[in-house]
Length: 135
Image 1 (spheres, rainbow, N blue to C red):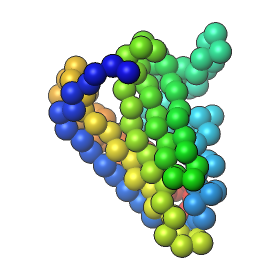
Image 2 (image 1 turned 135 degrees about the vertical axis):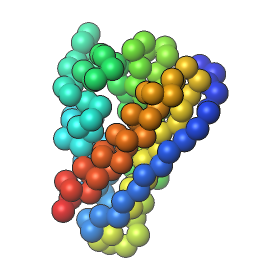
Image 3 (image 1 turned 180 degrees about the vertical axis):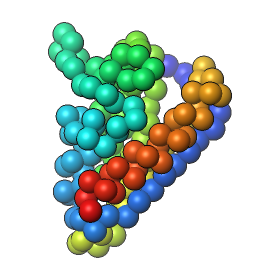
């Protein structure tokens, strides 16, 4: 794994009146990414067996690492498969019918301030999209 320096972070959260398993199933399916990540993912494609997203900043590789028991969804994205940076999502059961979602972006070295500010706006919209999806 590449060594990255973290310069900043932003986390957005929401609470959904839906069981954790249903929320996790939806969010951990990469095919659903364009349904809630409307600012970043314009279209998903598979190229040579690899997931790629068409985004406002260009074409990027995507990879998910998930752990349903812990409710963890790590989303890796980058223009080069060897230089992918992660964003972290946590799906938290509060009760049988109440689930929290935490989504965190980090500002990594190499991310310019303008792009970072855009990402900070996008994460708010994306988390609101998740909440609306389950309303």
